[in-house]
Image (cartoon, rainbow, N blue to C red; front, top):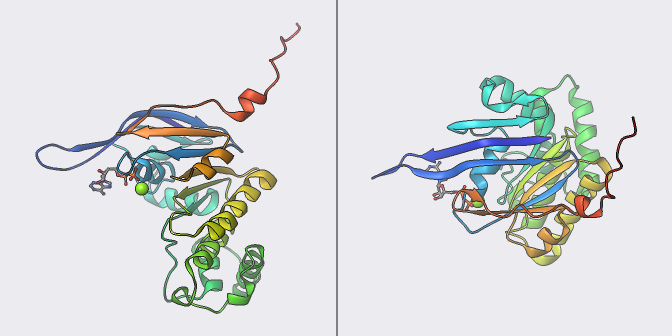
Length: 240
Ligand SMILES: Nc1ncnc2c1ncn2[C@@H]1O[C@H](COP(=O)(O)OP(=O)(O)O)[C@@H](O)[C@H]1O
Ligand SMILES: [Mg+2]
């Protein structure tokens, strides 16, 4: 589970600081698929970075399962990210000097006890899962945007994270590639029960989500009901 409790964040600016997140509280249950929508500048990327432990709020708490990310050292956060969190960016963020296979295996090099051979094997399995094994030795600049994003997804999946954050993962893709990327994320959500939090402007993505959080000016304005809640049968009273 992911929980934000009264999270605020501002950035220094003249004449006064910009309040980017204003006392935000929400929860995402394990296995849930939540879409975050809202106009540009409303704080979505800031929120996602804080949720993934890439950035810290000024006040408030961010709890991922049993860990309060606001109380951890940078070193602990780095290993927590490597073990539990996958992050997918709008602009892919592959390392230009590494080929596709090496990019996919990157999180494993950062933490692991695996041998070089095991890392390469695992990376190849992940490349196959996104149908990119034929481009293993290609460098990012030789790939299309859709191909780059598939590599980035394989990289995000390689540590079998329990939660995946994606910041406008289809914004730079055409509709065909958007669908491929979305299907990969959805498949992970449904089959592995991986929690999925996607920032998006795409109504098609939002439609697939269990729940949509709408952001405006640093606040969440409409936490709509989850499908699972709507679908759920009325709770039975416990007999004693
Ligand atoms: N590192 C930063 N320093 C200063 N201002 C920032 C920084 N990051 C984001 N902002 C500002 O915070 C606001 C929200 O940004 P962001 O979270 O990127 O919004 P969104 O992803 O919804 O477009 C914007 O006004 C942006 O300029
Ligand atoms: Mg953004």
